[in-house]
Amino acid sequence: MIPTMPAWTYSQLSTFETCPKKFYHARVAKDFPEPPTEATIWGEKVHTAMEHRILNKTPLPEGMSQWENIAKKIDNLRGEKFCEIQMAVDKNFQPAPWGNAWSRGIADVVVKHDDRVAILDHKTGKRKPTEQLMLYAGYAFATYPEVNVVSTGFIWLKEKKIDSQVFTRREVPMIWQEFVPRVAKLESAYETGKWIERPSGLCNGWCAVKSCKFYKDKK
Image (cartoon, rainbow, N blue to C red):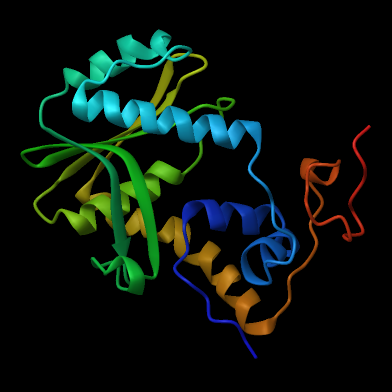
């Protein structure tokens, strides 16, 4: 029986592109569960604390107070502020219900002012820009038809730096042209059942799929 492909997220697409076999075991068969790591647990705590700080002015807890200046900068942005906003689209890149979407994602912070939206994403790991916020800009243009400009920013908390990029509505076709061919490969894997092993740095003891031919114990 061919499994039904659920709505894809940037994280899932990235996992698939790193190694289709890992994606299969983690997301489809779910026979090699990956327990939370210290990094993921810390990341969740940081996101929760920043959400409460931005929406309710709750002081950041011990160990996070060094990011108060970042929170103040968000305070000073003009517009209505939201956290953990769900956005989803169908295959025609139109707004869709979360549970019946083609693609979906949750934005850490959204600031809406007139015909502009800012989307911010807190990152607790190493600085590594990706196309994630380009995808989120695509979601935003679909979600807010009155919006013409989307400003995006990765907030790298360890380095206290921001990588920003601005998108305009006329760039919407370009945004989806970036992702459609990549998602087609994921869709093909679901249809054919071919999940190819692909070696990466995760093979050196970091991947849960220890039965893979590329897996090696940590040195």
